[in-house]
Amino acid sequence: MSNDVWERAREIRKVAEDGRPLYERIANVLSDAIRSGELADGHRLPTVRELAELLQISATTVVSAYNRLRDDGLAVGEVGRGTFVSHPAGAPAVANDRQPLHISANSSSLLIPASIAWRRRALASAETRLRLAFPEAVDLMRGGPDPALLPTTALRRAWRAAADNLTVAELQYPMRVETDPTLVEQLLPRLEADGVAAGPDEILITSSTQQLLALVVELLHTDRTGSDPVIAAVEEPGYQTAMDTFERGGLHLVGMPLDDEGVRPEGLEAALANGARLVLFTPRAQSPTGSSWTTERKDQLAEVLAGHPDVWIVEDDHFAEASTSKPGSLRNDPRLRARVIYVRSFSKCLAPDLRMAAAVADDDVRNRLSLAKSFADGWTPRTAQRALAALLADPETDRALELARSTYAARRSSLGALIQECTGGVIAPTIGADGLHLWFSLPAGGHAGELVAETARAGFLLAGADPFYVGPGHDRSIRLNAGVAPVEVTAGVAQALANTLRHLPGRSEMVLTP
Image (cartoon, rainbow, N blue to C red):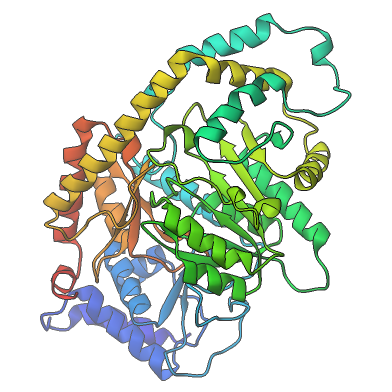
């Protein structure tokens, strides 16, 4: 890397201004060096702090310059690694360890190698950094429920009931691993009410949805033939922990694009054409967008999947107890039922520390999952299962869930409308109308990194889009947990976003570019 580039960039400050902002003029110096080959393809650029100190400019100016390079296709940011020079469009590609396996013209994103697993770490790191810098800021980054809306009193009663009926024999190793019948009794009518086909012997209790996904990965590897990679299709944007779990388990990911009704059929088709052996869906209250299936969309997806009999299907119904929609399940389709695993978890609605999820699968798959679980943690404690059963049986639980359902819906609606009003329609919720989150796409010229930094200064922590995608490089959206935003902070959030937009570099471009 030539030092002449950075010297020219430093000299920019001494040149008379020509009406362009400083970040744009510095970006032009760097882009010229990239196009000429002076800065080679794949070369790591200095960190934001390093370049800010070298050029004696603010970190915000460096971020804006790097964002401009990314906009022009001349740089790519990789979470945890840095910013790298990217070959100009039309130039011959140079192989390096960051290349995807292959590119599909029909896919929503690149198929990328396994074993990266960076998303959860990136979110946690960003939150920690922002909380340290702005300890008084309202945290709307996290994906958890509002603690005030959890059925805490009923949960205390449930644990007491489970403890009061506990026997010494029940603390021993079980002869057989079975789902507690009192929990099955509570789950079956809830599953039926939601249109999920399930029999009493088809329910397996796992320690979390994450554990269920890890067990599915294990079975996929067991069934693997040959040396080809095992590919999983995931929603994009989607649930970051599921993506990390799949990658940690050695799977490769391909993304499926969304609209208001969930995964688009053509996106599913493209993922299957890319060789996906596993498809992960969120039928309702999708995280992070809030999209939910309609009956028509579910049927369209079923038609696509019917032509691929070797593909496993997992439905992650993480918000079932507080959702406002009832799309049903692909298990109800006889063509698909044998290979659909429906999983219903309770963390988002009843308590995150209640580490249980109910998986529903046909006998063969359920038995294989149960065997795999026996080598993981053995079984999910029967005492905990009975506590969950007692919680679901308590009338106060359903009353608390109804309050949570209406409160979350109202908060999403009011905050989304207020943000749209305060920003003059420049920012509006993009898709989805259920769950905890609002997902916003930024106008042209806007960058999530800058917006997140500036709104943090204004007292609100938001999440940038990158960790919710298969690969990094998505800086045009933000996630906001509206479920934990009470009415007294909504006006502040909306005004902070509006003020941030007015002061971000390139606002004229943001307004004028469609």
